[in-house]
Image (cartoon, rainbow, N blue to C red; front, side, top):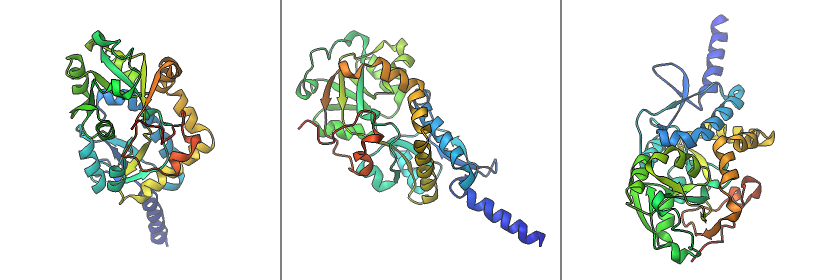
Length: 301
């Protein structure tokens, strides 16, 4: 009789932790995320806080789950490959694209309220005013853009006929901008301010004049083999939205709060680009999910 109850308890425990991976060393249920480089961690704290809240909100149904980082930096392409195999990486958050959604499963609950698609430029301090008189996409094309290898932005910018220089790591981007290897480093609305503060000693400044805008939702991604984790994330986000916790975490994140306050979106010139990488879906069409709703058809040709 005691044996039967033990089996039932063990089955219940196993059922709860199926959404996460059993770590062989700690014997704990874990979810593995990409390694957070210093320049990543500073603007990823929001995602880490949100993920922790989601896992705690869903703990009663799915069991306790700890978050562990992979031990080495990886490119976006490598993360996508490992995630697809559900090896070493179980979860990531990133801008979506048709290619990425074909490779892995997007949890269609937007995480950044559209702010990733509101781009602000970092510039060399000697070029702080180079965008002052730019009023069109055609004028903007005279400048070179630095972007990370594998970012969906690369395809967007090339589609819109911009010259792009790519690097494999974040740190290289800031060093190359400081050395004048390209003119502009495009960052998401909640990334630009913490980035420039982190790299102030390199002589970088925020452009005060312009915002380049294209629809770019950010989702959690998991392996298509890990439907239980996808369900857990979706359920947790919807629960947090329903009682206002999601918005509380979002609007009280220091980087998001300071960026919305200091970057003066309403006073900036706004130039729109098409995003050919995007799969339009219901989440895109729900204005309640976006801080600044974007007309997906409003773009340059």
